[in-house]
Image (cartoon, rainbow, N blue to C red; front, side, top):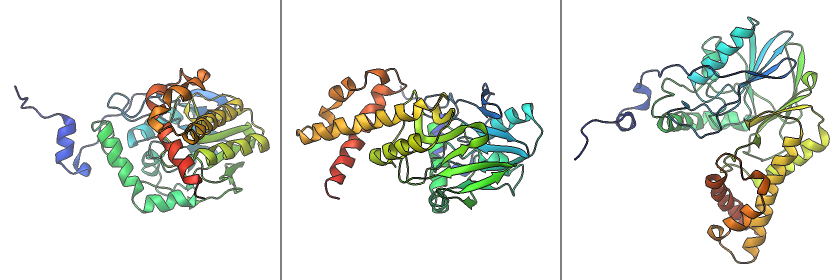
Length: 318
């Protein structure tokens, strides 16, 4: 028997994405205080689904003496509104800036909730991210989130960054210094990590994950490892907020660099022995006993192996 009813997913495939009505609000999630004046909502570790409404990153904010600075407000207008509600439960201080760590839309499409509150709010990001958003990457992310969540992010629009920042830049926001680090291509070619000396804290973006394997489709294993090794050597912080997973101390920087390096070096060695990427998984798994409890380890590792294989192959011709 054929079903005559259409699912929401089917309907969305037959109408323009912009025609969908705004989806319901995202429920409130717990807020964690990770430093004296810094707060994080640690998102689910799954990929975007209808159940989590696309929420999966770690939106955060710093309450400076002169106002609130928000970092990566999430994957949709609904997520951004949830973050805004959480901030307003704590303080009525003005929200003075948004900081976006990289172009992947699960981190910054929530900008919309804040620009609707204040159209002139400054939004800082790497110039390459600004370029990619202007070229249409943001709209691709809006469409992808809408499909993956079966419409649960409907109403989200692109409100991209407006102010370019580069490696070594320092911006005073609310009387505190925010230091931006872009050492080179890592998780993407437009990552920035943001240090807040007053809090002894680093917002690492997706250059660091804790407890979950994340995509490397737009990144480089060698570059991500080099970036994290340099940050670990040159920057002393007590608190690190990763792009995904729980915040912790600075040891998660090295732990994630170790994970990526061990995957890449094992894949490179097995490739030199003549193995294809699909033949390597068992041997790579054996190299990573302490990471096997991570979310999506089994499903995500195969994709990372394939990407590491392609990178090792490409580097032979440099």
